[in-house]
Length: 603
Image (cartoon, rainbow, N blue to C red; front, side, top):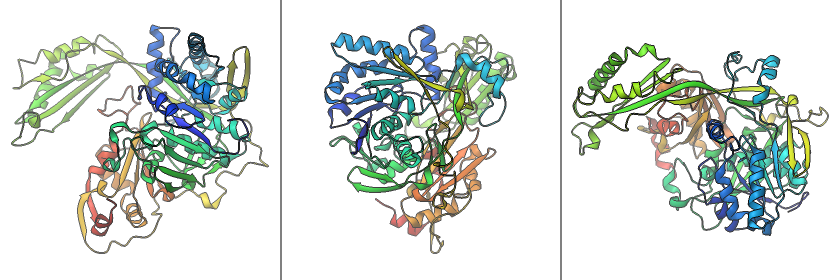
């Protein structure tokens, strides 16, 4: 594959997160022809994890498992001309490049290793704070003056990757780029896209978003999981990206999983907000996407329209929020709620009160059955979490106080884990900086270059944002889609009998994308599932700001729940701090559904 190619570029993914299936790289390289192997390893929480690793090893801070994967496949990639692009550089892409150089030498290979940086703004926080206050993306509050971030990284785009590939790099490792940048960059390089080729760039952004989470678009975490063949080992995805920005999503033959309209729709709804999906290189209109089943395990993605990128870059800061600890007590049998209330009061009494902690959260999950069929069926769980700037206050002093109640309180007392010490937690602070203040640093051996992240938009060639009537955003509360008349019988049934859902986190916010599989069902869904109805069904959202975005082209509605996760994953006290289960929770709610829809739902 060379720059300027006219055929589709086969871009494979081998990782959706730090900890994904280790042998996926070998599976993708050996399973069939590909041109580019990509891996996404970074998330907001991952950056904090890598900081802790680098604190123990100053020369670390990158994803070490990527080196193991490269040891298995790098020789084959070089033989077949497969380019490798990954954000496994984490906090230290230069260090990762050095380790890769050492690996190639040890294996007796000759590989050109490039790395892309410029995302690390940790040393520039003072300068940037003075410029724009580093205001919180959601609340608008300026970053408090007393806070020194552990990490501060801008989300960069694909231009630095494209530059490195144009130098002939065989492997490109980056720091914090957007998840889709590892697809956009190769597309820029292979097809010589100009910075104003917004439709093509937007198509690559959407393709990158679809495959960035690995098996999530090939049947993993799928609402209708019973339809997925071979779930024991779901195959990883491939995007066949064309010069016009359209793509076909597929996987290697013979692997488990499924590529269908549903599995692709589910991933398109993952961790998104409104119709405009922003990236440093382009803004993609999610309400312009068209999906079609081209064949078994082949879904075509066409019609994507693009607009200029925003003038700012998202920046993820993490700072030390304090320390936390938690205990989970198992409560069995009769009077479970009373037992929970009583033992909680006893714990606070022994510690001197709950108000001494910066935060104390109590969650009682009353799952015990009446007349239980087994011992486990009689059990409920009480989870108590405390947070404070003082590690001693929430350390073993806290967990030991819980253990000391073991023989002195409710009958059947036991806990799910032994007492633990406190652990630090990071607070996620999303903000923005002007794109003009950031440059990507591209290096390969002695060669280096600075590349602008987002070049100035040329008014003569840029499509006016929102100017295309075919891509007009749906009003947040509109019942877009075929009208549905609720005639005939209604039946009480779980919403998930006719609707799929996928949910996730964006810092302290959560999103839930809900979709159906027929125009008739979509007409009903848009009329039924309003913002107020969502709050009724999801009680945790009753007092929160909920946004609703209708995506008629996907027969979907996306809800964004502001503040559900507090200050974000690492500091959240929720049992599910990443909102992974929120969609399935919504699908389990019993609602009145037209019998005609229940009778015609796909098998």
